[in-house]
Length: 137
Image (tube, rainbow, N blue to C red):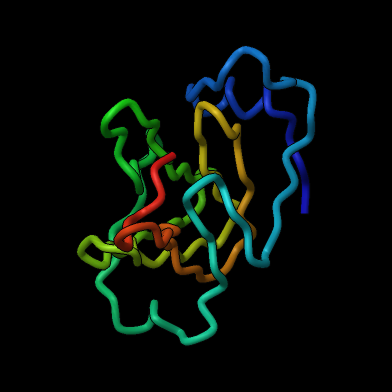
């Protein structure tokens, strides 16, 4: 699968990242388990996508984790091919992503993460402190 530099992806999608991140670094497109801060991209081995009503992700993308309380959003971006997302109603499991071409997650602090064609579960990480809570990014 092809790669693009961080600078090329910023130019293509218009979602910028923090200034200290190297715009010349190549962003690989991977098909396995990946993490972007508090967000996990998990291959959909249980075929969760089969029974979900998904919506096409618009060119401007969608926030799969909203920016709340000083945090930053994780924005899912398509590459022009069919990219579908089926929200799972909140909680730790955010939704199911199905894409026929590479898709990207953009985050101001973490840069871009490339996702190969396939089906994936997007899940928030959680931590156990005095009580269980979702990880804040």
